[in-house]
Length: 186
Image 1 (cartoon, helix red, strand yellow):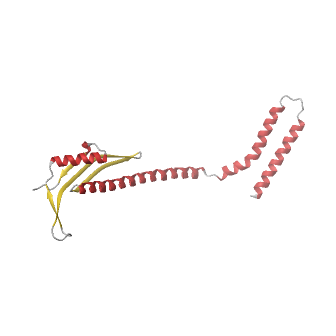
Image 2 (cartoon, helix red, strand yellow):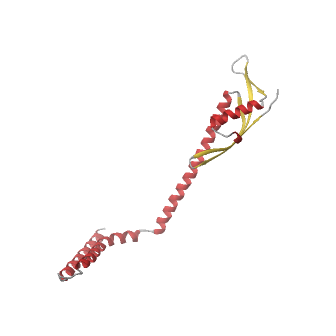
Image 3 (cartoon, one colour):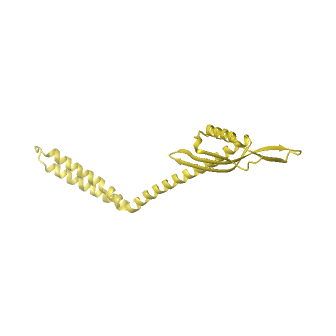
């Protein structure tokens, strides 16, 4: 480092001496004197900056720099993809929990749920929702720990009503929801 500074100072002093000699030698009435001073100023600036810039350029490995940039972009893209997948997975789980809770409050139970959900540009879109549900009536007899759930037939009107309520609650179009009744018997 000290060698670098000594070498740089020597070059700077030599450049200043050359500039001073040229200015002394120039005649005072010369029309080109201002242009020559501009060129000498550029020469002095080059002398000051050159060792710093050339040392940095010599030590720079362009393949390594471009590889690092590519790697950082690749990692960023990979993180975005992983984040999108995690968001979609969490949304599906929460959606299923909410839907299950909603239906249980109304006396229904989900036996099968298929979701076609996409996450693009920070927007979640539900493309298709397929449900198989069954209705039950809880009969609590004797001891409270014993619960008997009886399957009850679900009518088309009930299925349509459930579909409407789900559409209202989750802002979906009715054609994206399919609801089937499972094990309907009297």
